[in-house]
Image 1 (cartoon, helix red, strand yellow):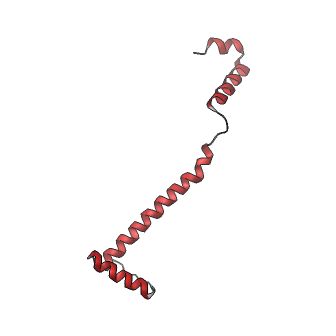
Image 2 (spheres, one colour):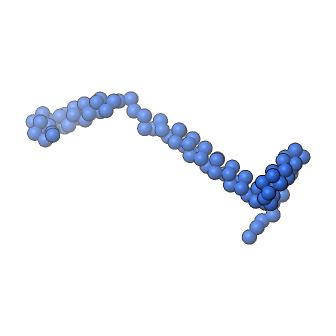
Image 3 (tube, rainbow, N blue to C red):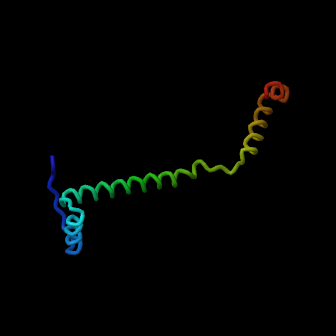
Length: 90
């Protein structure tokens, strides 16, 4: 079901809207629907990129993979002793 909406816009925007519909050879309703969908998609994409940018810091680590493996080896030796570590590594 279609819904009627009303918005007050400046004269230049109203002229641009009329002109755009004519140039695209589309009804104003279609131009408005497509513009809103396009705008919505660009906002969704921007919000997704922003979320990734904001959350990517969570995954940044100061340790290198080598540091991490040394830390793991040290913790295993501390927990189980040297004899266990040497007999159970590949």
